[in-house]
Image 1 (tube, one colour):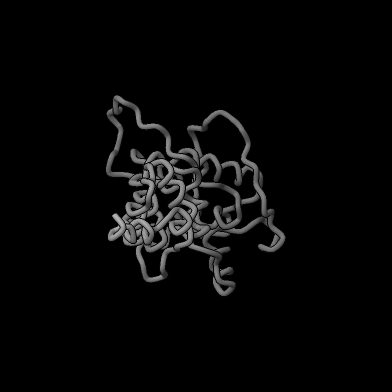
Image 2: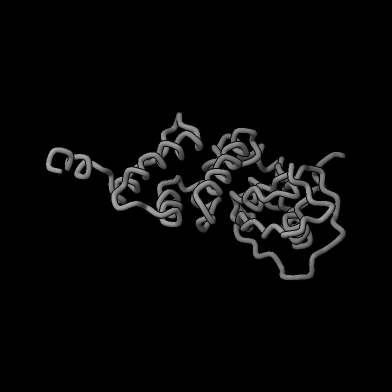
Length: 215
């Protein structure tokens, strides 16, 4: 026992798990696999629920805020993180602040506040509570292009994924996923009624206008 006691003494502990961060050249999946391998060496053993919470605390502010409260298990968190990473890679999400040189382009893409330069635009938006709409004003930009700017200006927050019904409806689309709902299946951002309602609220509040665009 004395001969092999060093294995226990050198084993990582919970403070070691929280002290690490993802490297710049490391994908989310690579980091998660490496971190879980380290977590498996901790004595006493780390349960799945605690492991998920510890891993969430090691993530950058972008992933921490987008993922929100800890998911049900570690694999679900990794799945969400990989979808977010893919969204950043494809330009559908912005990781970190937008460079100043891109502000003019971002304003054009996300439309203009009527009669006001961007720095005077409202920085907070509280959507109205109302019954879900079935009709929406047409917009001249994709919802996936609007979402990053809404997140940047703190107009919306990523929502928790809705529970998947035990009996899937006929219209359920497993191949689709919605970034606004943490990668939840059955619909994408373009068909997300929760996001459509936010955009409609902004239009009706005269904060968002698409009249500057040509068809």
